[in-house]
Image 1 (tube, one colour):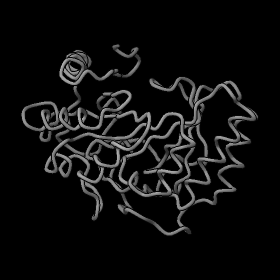
Image 2 (cartoon, one colour; image 1 turned 90 degrees about the vertical axis):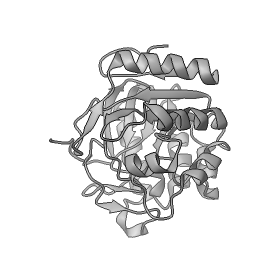
Image 3 (cartoon, helix red, strand yellow; image 1 turned 60 degrees about the vertical axis):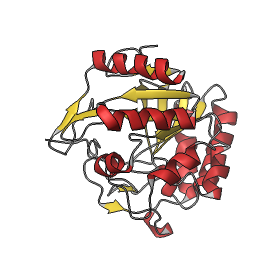
Length: 260
């Protein structure tokens, strides 16, 4: 099955995001390979070619180069709803992510004051002090949590050595205004049934995020056996999460509005 190509620029879009409106993407990652601390079985960019928890500075574009690209893009596209760190892997792997977050916030204040600064992260580096400092500059920290037990975590996210689910959950509990994003899948590995689902619910209840966002695999995936969870099932799961945890939940799928 085909997957989506990597982002080739330091910025991309603006695109219409299901969750963030008109979003200008920021890709502060290498443009020729996917660098991430996960190798998720559902990733629409395909397998991770560099699975690491830290990386060399020389692999990444310079902070000044990235900020100049964001400024240039904003001068052409000031009517945006969000400036979003995402791209070809895990954004917080950039060695100067704190500087980038601060710089993008300053650019937002000057050129697009109505926009939010957002981050899509897999949560593996939130425990690090400099990443925690960087989150102070992020309006919408959207953090991944696909599993609540170590076995399902290992099978779905396939983390780099040194990453533990316990550390991820403990760190997420300390993130103010945390938004949890969870990709729900079925098939050879599932997080929507039985003990894995119950463990995920328990983790959400422990973290107590500001919001939970659930969705499934609307884009092609490289791993055989991954099955998409249909919209009606996402709605049902959202209702269960609300009833069992009291947390606000939004379910998303392609070309439709969130179920609130």
